[in-house]
Image (tube, helix red, strand yellow):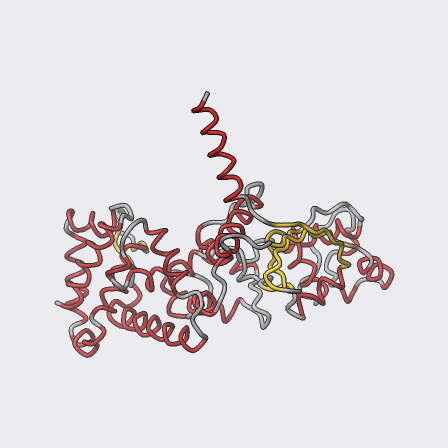
Length: 377
């Protein structure tokens, strides 16, 4: 009996200590209000770099606009009040993006059946009656407000993370980098997004050029959206891996925790500091391209075809960074460096260390050491 009481008391104490202190408010917003709030940055982090990149294609966006025209009930969006009068969009990014982009004439309606007469039309092309009809449509929002607690950091980070995860369980679950992008917004995260669009980087990973496929508003076209690395922000995670793994002291625990900790460490840096870090990445990437050419980050698979490898990318980038004071020597001896790396990949044992092993911290340290030595020679 005493044991049961003790357990009950422990459970109740835990509830009092860890239960989220929050309140919820519900509001309805007219579609023009939504566009206005986004333009005035009251609803922040809405554009494609937030949560995940914009994954709705034009037919799906069009279907949503058609649902609004038909006055079909729309699920509510969820907002988190980051500061007074400023909100993060926790769930509903794709719906809000569709509304804002359509009001800005960003895409023509396509694939509609109920309103097939509207296919090919942008907002400006709609009859005035339909425009006014859309202006009267509303989207409901649940606003989550965090109250004071014993640990405000717990509320800000754990609450947001938990809500993001739970809200997305019913749809396409956020992957690790999309979740980092939600939780660690700031100059460093913006820099990761910027660096992922570097031409040398996109060419190395066969991602369509951002210059050719992203418009002035930062919206990617269907060609770029079809690329899974771009669409799910795996390109940004690759850039993050360089910053996370280049320093030996960070490599402990799981790779996921290493990447998370790096985002946390750089979360509050200034724009100038982020640009300085970015210059490190672009310098190393440029050297990698000069040394290895178009086969950079690639190995020959069993069919003799060149295949990109994330572990090889880690090793080459970090190996060059750790030898960054010997740039002239690396460029002068690039053929020897390529030969050393080829030799490592031709050997069954070292191939397994570099390419085949799982991403444990010990395996990462070992492969980085091998490739650092190959580069330094």
